[in-house]
Image 1 (tube, helix red, strand yellow):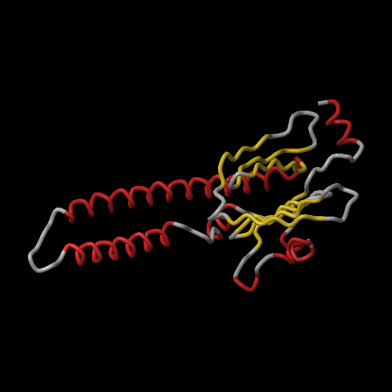
Image 2 (image 1 turned 90 degrees about the vertical axis):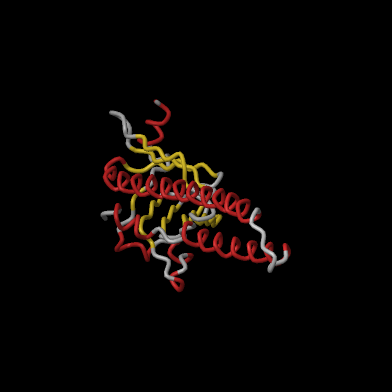
Length: 204
């Protein structure tokens, strides 16, 4: 704890700042947002070496080697292919200068320190990430139920025989119907754009 406090006091720590929406276009990560495809920035945390840009479609992370290096690694994590989970928020202690938001996106752990004066904004981000996590998990459950119901329906249909339709024709018809139905369910439940959730919780 003492080392952490000393680092903060000396300005050696990497505590992030929440960027105002009016300054979104001034940060480096804005250059990598797909504005042409309707991607929109909702939240940015910027530290000495990193930028964490939360859009309606993805987390864009500009990962810096160190505070004194200009080299950056650009990483993009789409929400629909990298589920958000294990979202936590750690509030500041008496002598702490920062709060911390932690989450898992795909298989990558993030732990971001932010100036404790901006805790209200971090609370909003926390609620948005929690809601995205729960929405994706719920839709995954629904899609699992859909696949189970298809198996049951196919087994039941397979026991029905007619003299006018060959087994091959029946199989093809069932297979095509199943494919189209599951494809529709997948498109319905695999949300890509989470802008509506950010709009609900982010109150900059």
